[in-house]
Amino acid sequence: MPTPLLVQALAALSVPALAGTAVLGLRLRRTGEQAAGREARLHERVAELEGRCAELERTASCDPLTGVWNYRHLQLTLDREIERSRRAEHTDQQDGPRPLAVLLLEIAGFDAVVAEHGRGRASAILRDLAQRLAMEIRRADTLGRYSGEEFLVVLPDTGADGAAQVAERLVWSVRRHLLLDWSSGPREPRPAQGNGLTAAVGVAVLPEDGTHAAVLLRAADRALAEARAAGGDCWRRTRPPHLPEPLTSGTENGSTAERDRSEKPGSLSPCAGGDPLTTPVVSQTPATAAGPGDGPSQSSGSCPDG
Image (cartoon, one colour):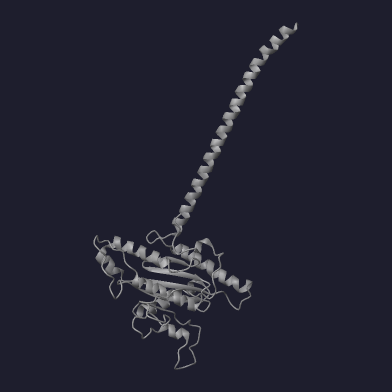
């Protein structure tokens, strides 16, 4: 076959091949774009599901009324902190487990708030007060709603002295908290005797009052009953039943002194060292400072916003 004819034949045969190659390239590009789009949508879906899971976890651990941790989260946190304290007894070669304090706080006076403002506004006041109490503890501590107007505070690495200071500060905060005001005019001055709300706090400390969650809560509840019987606006810590009475007479030891109210007017309990209406307790003194590696579930008294 002559050369010109051969070139023409090859050119005629290469046109469909080139067209097919172009079509195949377009298809491959379109397929790649579609795969990239599907991958992007999958990533968005995964991120959306992760966000929903985080929201569900937060909702499951958060009290819907007050915005602080709920009873379920408190149980899990208390069990975990007790196990952590027991484990430290062996890993750190200590004489006993690391200290852990539990405060059971009950707010009195909400019946008058409900009668004056209604249940809806009283719930808003309770939420505002719970958020205020959450600001009075460390990030390593946990505050949650136990039931009704009762709140439980878990204080890791905190002994009796630190727990007493935290209880003092919480009682003072409830008494002097500035309640929400829905009036359109200027806010009325704060009454000299407080806002009408008082708090009674029961204190229990591991290991003196027990090394189990149920035992600690029972001890805190007994102490709360004593504080309630004393008229509220104070905290109490009962003597553990297994400890003997002090042998000394005429002078009281620290545990007995904590159960008696101060004779000084305006003082909430003996550990204040001054009039709490003018000088609130400034800080907590834990037995051992909490480490920065505490779990995120204890990072604050309030539930995370998301």
